[in-house]
Amino acid sequence: MASTTTRTYRKHFTPLESNPDVFTELIHKLGVSSCLSFQDVLSLEPELLGFVPRPIHALILVFPTTEEYERRVAIEDLNAEDVFDGRDEADVVFFRQTINNACGLYAILHAVCNGEARNSFGTPTLPYNCLTADPKDRALALEDSRELERAYADVAQKGHTAPPESAEDEVDFHYIAFVKSHINNHLYQLDGDRKRPIKLAALREGEGVLSEQCLDVIRGMMFEDNVNFSLMALVG
Image 1: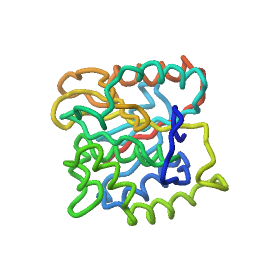
Image 2 (image 1 turned 60 degrees about the horizontal axis):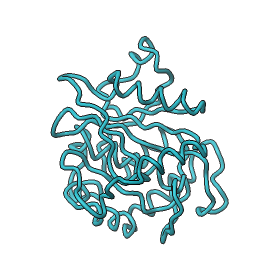
Image 3 (image 1 turned 60 degrees about the vertical axis):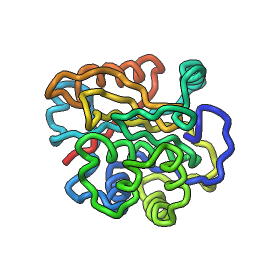
Image 4 (image 1 turned 135 degrees about the vertical axis):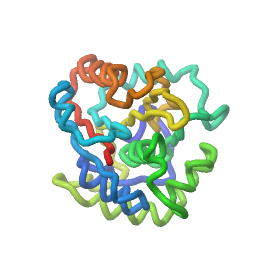
């Protein structure tokens, strides 16, 4: 999905297929440790969640967007302060989306740059360089990176479905990430198409992204909009 609002973009990427192998290949191309990978989460039932490898560092949800979803997001963001204009969150790394159709990339970066996963890449890599940059510099770093563009273009052609004919063609699905702060136990929903991070809850010691608070949000999005969904976990 390009955006829930009308914007003008100077760069367009072919959207990624919701495929853990594609996502895993991209993070490894960007310098993330081979110990980390994405895995499908096939069910939210507790007995089946137990089969997901541990530790789980982040979740990425992909879902078809609806007009109702876009209206709700627009209302929620109406009076929100944009990270480009004001204070950045101190305990989470947030990427404001400025590349069209690249919401999968932004969800991936949110997953690997937060929580314990942020310790999984060395220097100098693009994710590492983004950790301490401010939101505007992060956005420019992604837009200007030829390394990222090459790596992304390679994996965007992979998967089981044919990509759109043009990178500027709109798609009706969207990716968001759920992460735990590396500083405290705050649980965040990170969507580069929103103006800023969304703090969901303060987790108890030992709780992670599979906490009931996070799963309740995901279930709410599934049932409220009555849409199909796919969920991946960053593990390792």
